[in-house]
Amino acid sequence: MSVVHQIQGVWHDFMNLDVAAGVSGIVPAADIRGAIERCETLCKLSVLQGIRGVCCEREYGELARAYDSDAADCDGLITALCGEDEAALDKEMKRWFDALSRIDGKPHIRRIFVLMARLAERLRSLGTSFFGIFHEELLNELLAVELPRDREIWLRNTLRRVRTFFAESRREKQKGDMERAREFMKDNFNNPELTLKTVADHVGFNEKYFSTRFTKECGCTFITYLNDLRIKRAQELLVRTNMKMYEISDAVGYASVEHFNHMFKKKLGISPRDFRQSGK
Image (tube, rainbow, N blue to C red):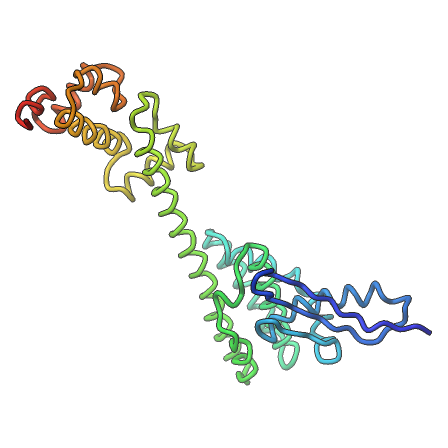
């Protein structure tokens, strides 16, 4: 009877050759498909061995079977960890840890290992490395924890790091969104048709949410920031050029010279014409 020793490799990063490998047992040729599926599971568990880990069925077969049966039950908790809904996270944490507290011994450790491997799989799908959040010896720490209660404390602290990572990532992204909005305004303030909606659409937010976020993070309203850009540029043109008032008004994005005069005097307490004379 022909046999196969099946190895399945997964490359997460071509340049760094971050490799995960799973090695099946020896199986009849008719069972090759099953061996391949088992190798896929073993590859998912390879994170337990660290970077470029290798998992063999001889050592991890029992855990692989637990992963195949229990991994999907971890998805609700992992989704809540990566999301923003605190109520949903509290609910999932209670559900998952209540179930964990009802088992002991090796099944207790296996269930935690399954969760961590499933978490690594989800992080990879989101473009984040498991070892970008945790150090490589993290899971060896778990093996050194003897009591179930202490393992659960360890796990809660570990999951808190995931929660913190995604919260900080969202904050950085939000800062990036407002920075993109300001850059867009700097590039387009001379367009008289530039509106709150235009900029909100550019960064992918609805007007109300964008307006609130902009004011909170930039320290002024959208229209104040826009007028400041226009008046600052008008000041430069008034001092450095001989452009007529209506030409400057048009160049900085005001639809009429009357509106330009009004906004300029409101901002600086002096008319554009008087500003020019005083500046020269």
